[in-house]
Image (cartoon, rainbow, N blue to C red; front, side, top):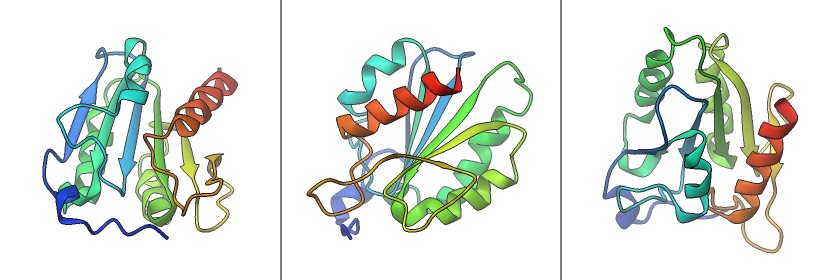
Length: 153
């Protein structure tokens, strides 16, 4: 299992976002704390042309659970916006618990290298030759998200 306790990952913004408002939103809850420089990872930027990507950097957001709750609650009045959540391994259980409180808002939960099986979520990527979990900025994760969103229609 990767060690995400590097001090540098705790610096920078807790949340970064890109993409238009009022469209489908992908909430990425990142235990590794990518997106250090006030921008979503480069691999995700093409998605931001058509969807809003909200990237929560857990190491830089100590109260990340309340931040997730706040982000999800902000979408409560916008019934036209689809909301999908992406996270990886060590946070899957906590994220699924949080999403359960907002089940009417969240269309899907997409997981990378989960540590267990979760019937209410879809696994979109697994590590191949690297220690899990695969970084959420990895191109295989983006491809998995695109396929999942296409399958959901």
